[in-house]
Image (cartoon, rainbow, N blue to C red):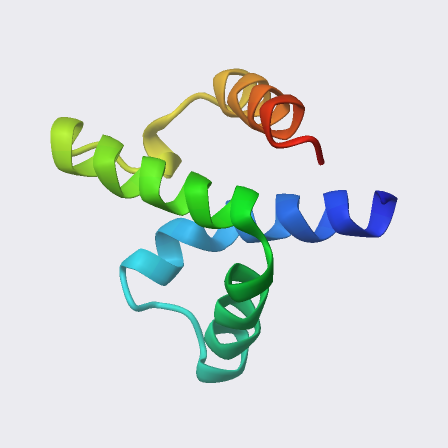
Length: 80
């Protein structure tokens, strides 16, 4: 379970780069494989896409304490 949580947190930290097409191919492929297996991260990606579309704000613009709280709430809701 802990390994899954770390993996999901790592995914959350690189999703903006993924959306911007800035991930190296190897990292992008690993991320996409994770997304195929993890409904929680897939949902988080869709929520992030929606947020960006509505606000034009990327994750880097969110204060770290707010991002930590959002990620904690996401994990609690997804059961990770």
